[in-house]
Image (cartoon, rainbow, N blue to C red; front, side, top):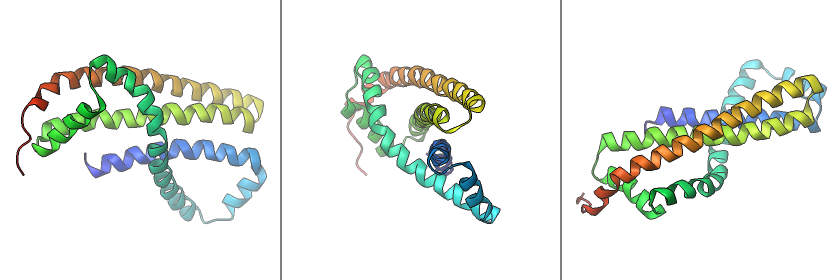
Length: 182
C-alpha cells in the first residue's frame, strides 16, 4: 500500500471522529465557549492542529474499531471457509513472493473496508450526538444525513466484505505452495 493512500484513509477516519468529538464538546462546553475558544486561535494554527488531530484520531479509531470489524468480519470469513490464519497467510504470501499485483489487490480492498468501517461507526455516533448537542431543526437534518451515510457505509461494508472473501477463496490454493526463500 502506498503511504499516501494510508494517510488519507487515517485522515478520513479521524475527521469523522473529530466531527462527533466537536458535537460532544458542544454538548458539554456549549456553543459560545467553543466558538470563543476557536476564534481566539490563529486560523492557520487551527487548521494545522485539526489536521494533526484528525490523523492521530484516525490512527486511534482504526485500532479501536478493528475489534468491532473482526466480529462482523468473522461471519463472512467463515462463510468463505477461511480461517483467520489462512487469511493472514495469503497476505504474507503476497509479500514474501513480492507479488505486487496481489498485494495491490489486497490493499485496494482493505483500504476501502477501513474507510467504510470508520464511516459506519463514526456517523452512527454523529447521529446520536447531533440529537444531544444541536438545536432540534439542525439536529434532525444532521441526524438524518448521518444515518444515511452510516447506513450506506454499513451496507457497502457488508457487500464489499463478502466480495473480498469470495475473491480470497480463489487465492487460497496459493497457500499450498512453499514460501520462497528470501
